[in-house]
Every structure is written in C-alpha cells, then in structure tokens.
Image 1 (cartoon, helix red, strand yellow):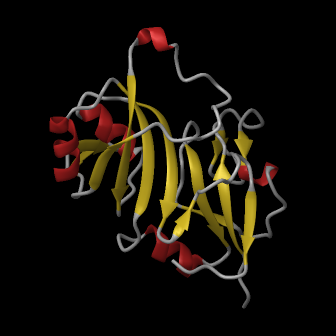
Image 2 (tube, helix red, strand yellow; image 1 turned 90 degrees about the vertical axis):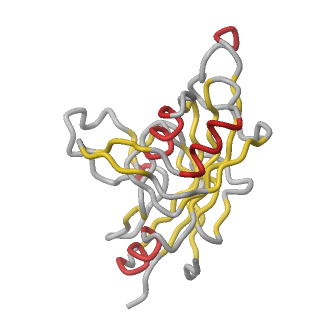
Length: 190
C-alpha cells in the first residue's frame, strides 16, 4: 500500500485535526481547510489551537507511532513572559514536575537554551502590548510530547509561554514555510 505524507506549517488558531466533535462545531478551523488531504490522513502528534509550526501528517499509522515515540526529537521556540534566567533554564533542562489529566510526572531531561528573537511572520492575533514588560525566547528540544507540555514547563519555572512554535521534528525543519503552507512528501524519513 502506498501512503501519503505531508509537512504543514500549522497556523495559529487551527486545531490539529480534521473533524470537530466538540461543542463549538463549525466555529473552529481545521487542517482540512488548508489542503485537499487524502482520506485517512492523520496528524502525527498535535499542536494545540494557539500553537504554531511544523506538523507532520500521514496515512501511515506505523510512521505515526514512530514519530510520536521517544526516539524522535521535537524542537520548539517559545516566547516567554519575562527575561529568563540561568536557574530557570537549568530547572527545565533537569526536568520539572507538571500535571496532565490529574496526574503529576517529572519531565525528562531536555535541551533548553536562550535564543534571539526568531524571524517568523507576526501572529494574526497580537501577543500582548510591550508596555506589559519584556519577553524572551528559548529553544526547547525534547523527545516526549505530553499535552501542552512546553507551556506547562515554562509556567512551572515562572515564565509563562506567550507564543509557541514547533520548528523541528526529527530531520524535518520548519525553515521558511509560511503559515498554512502544505508540502507533500514522496516518502517520510525521520
């Protein structure tokens, strides 16, 4: 069987799904509005509605399992509230305790570093007014990907995430994709 694979720059405000069974059906933007994907296409992992960036899609369930496993690195750029300090970066690198679905766990060691503001298009919804204080950017590279994990991690160390962009999954890099752009792949190699 031949499978289809896609790279997409998920824009802000879209759900990482094709069907919305939630209470606000019809009011949410779905990935299927961006491209005519073949039947059976699924997002590999998810980005929550306010998050942006690289998303892989496939019709191959085995590829989906591989990418979601702890074998594949995912890198995120996070704009955070305040100027992050070395203590907070060290805590994030060593793992912090976060809650998911009523259970608490400690995140695995990961790579976290302060970065310059990346050159991404402005988000369609303003982040916030600069008069509310400074912000800074960090890169977070991890192999796990629990529900809203990066947002929860930065909040735990006192620097809530204001904007989150996934920039890399394994060998695939967001590069210069524009929000909403879809790139079909002949094959997927992580």
